[in-house]
Length: 275
Image (tube, rainbow, N blue to C red; front, side, top):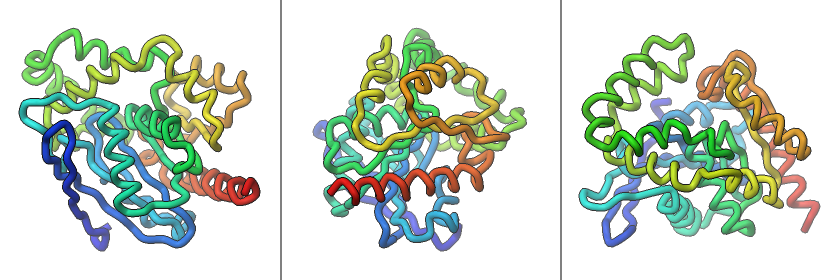
């Protein structure tokens, strides 16, 4: 991974100047943008640059504001809609074409909303255990209810201690990433998540999306069964990753990136045939 260089770009959002850290691997076949989840980072997807199945694709990933190398405004709260704006800023600034968005967890919400708002700029959408129904935002609602001070001084440390003991590599890595975040940014994005993930609002957005789309989940994460049943009933493409939980791309990257490549190849082929 040492040959992948991190860079930064400056953008203005809500009268604040933000520095966004990213990595960009050029490719000739189309672009895949990875959008990490709450409290995660772009480094979760570095292994994508080493996947032989994705060797011809352009790959882009960035840190949310308040994560690792990206700054966060001192006196303002950002939310999911701000992530949508950042995605669009990146797409336009780098003139990215034929974009496949891969969103993990809460990052999938931003990817879904971007795909809905800018379907002509998007070739396909991959939801990796993305929030689609109200029950997926229970943790965010708990954080909103407890308030920033309790989360910052008590809950976050307890959460990290539990994650470090997990048998799944993805959760153990997540615990380390949580040391690199702005606690206020985690809280603010949780509040935004709690507000937007109500009833079946996001599920309906996903079902109505005309683009090529797939829902991917870790086979060991039994909590997704109710959502999966709904998606399959609507004939949506659903893929499971064996021997993995919420971070399937870390727990079982070989299978994850093979399935992602199969979807990506098919999505771009369909787009070519439709023209």
